[in-house]
Image (cartoon, rainbow, N blue to C red; front, side, top):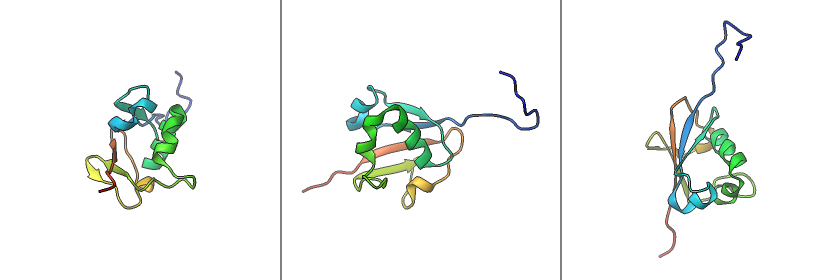
Length: 102
């Protein structure tokens, strides 16, 4: 591929999203999905574009995370403002499901 901007490196960030076992039926069984984006929200949207079944498992109709979804960014809780957190090449996102009920 020819780089037409010799002073500006063109690179795509690669973020690994670890899928909770209960959601793998929506990712064709994949435990880890590679995504791109400058924020956690953008990475999740990139994943949902390829695996549309994940949308209803992660997001409400208004685009917020479902209450029982917990996001970890590089093994640390991303709460609050999970979707707005910046990502860097090589980062890892873990999607977990909190148990509810009693």
